[in-house]
Length: 421
Image (cartoon, rainbow, N blue to C red):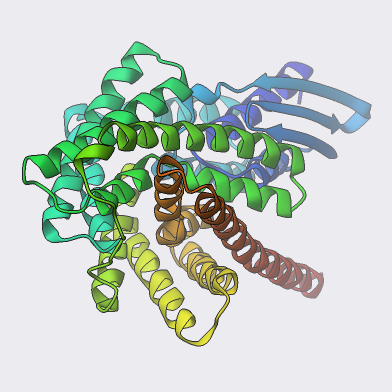
């Protein structure tokens, strides 16, 4: 392999890693993928350092040839796109197994980057995801069917506002704040129009669509597995966006405070756990659509979300600690994801994130803001700490399962290799 070909190989490996990072791949997967691709083409040692906005790569080939390349990653283009992530994962597997010509890798990447042929259909499909998430989680949080209708319409408005503001290239924090304020105000207007009954349940559902709960959980997970710098950067960004979302809804609450009586957050599904499980599955299905999951993954993702919440409800009957219940339910969701990933030959991330959706503390964030607007700082602090506690518990449950499965399959692979020799 000539020096020019080696440089092109390094660039192609970074292309794959950058795209994985932008469509939701975790840092450890990005680094492992880049390393595997380069080693399959003869690199003797590979050092990869990845954070959200930067990838640094050094590869050592034979004859002490050392190549280094850095890549600045635009986080503005970041989005959870599980279909692209699966395609990139499949491409990396094929590259490592067959070692095709480097031009073939470029052609395959260009094909993955192509926009969908039926863009209008994709927008309608995305709209379905927003509406389904809003209606499902309105029921999940104890709202009525009328609340579900109102929340679905509010999420439709979120879809529209996101599209308009994306074209305006508004800064992310202002984008999150403005959309959240408009969505919160619309929830109250829906009730005044008779298209809702409980503003709290409606806003909790809309918050689930807007809050970067997945990013916060992934940040905690990265810090727990020693990707400290990446985890801290992701956490800071996610918390800033979550704060913008929270203050957007808080401003809406303050504006409409005099028009609505004090809420007590009575759940209409508290005595109907099966309805809550079905609502969790429906809301998760909406998120699977939003994350552009492949059609065959939609049902499995919804099942994972519903089962994980069912496990959480069962655990709360026998355990007093909510932290332990959340961690154990998250661990169950991670086990389900690992099994489905191996059955479907897909990245575990595709199923892990969907399985944990119902555990994300969107409701706690709303109640925190509600107490702040009402001047009850002690209660707000309590719920705020609970929100962070749940994120840590989810991350801990996922990390424990991931660590076990990684160790187990690594030992199994080494034993198979040793037996073969």
